[in-house]
Image (cartoon, rainbow, N blue to C red; front, side):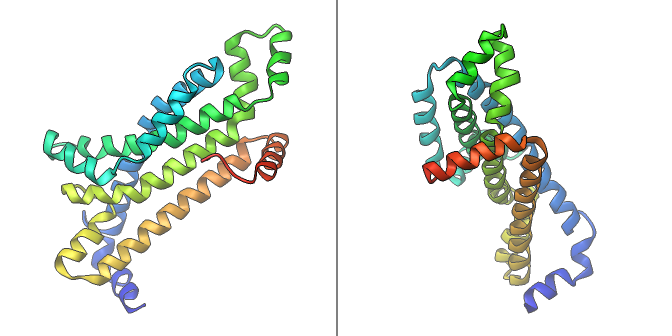
Length: 232
């Protein structure tokens, strides 16, 4: 507890470019950029494959293989290839980390919609795009948001590695603390990263409650109870 009080009670840690607000903003910027780029790739691809039913096996296998990639190893590789003049060596591994959960959950969400509901929508004269936008996406939204939540938490936690390349973020407190044996900074930075991840979890929980219709939420809960698991 003394380390926490030393870290959070030090006025120097709350001001300047190395202060908590500045590092928190840097961490947020890195995480948000990586998640946004992953969404631009994974959501359209997941919607397309889930709607057409083509390439689903390849998607699942590729996503599972991508999850096995070591983020720190990729970071070192891209730093060697691209240098440290930009944020690309950090953003690329984070995007690769974030894509699989979003892609798989989007694909599974669309594929898992009741075929009778899909047929009824076509029977009403809706086009393929209208069926996707008006019927499939709203029903699949809980799983899509689950994929986004999983990716966001992973990215927030892993953005700590940005400090290895000399960039900012909350990881600076941990990396610099170890380098200078300032363990109050190490503990304080670790607590900040955990709190940030919990805040992201809360944001997505509130987002799901406000965007997903109660009927769809109840249906998803029934399916999860029946299957005994979530799609992750």
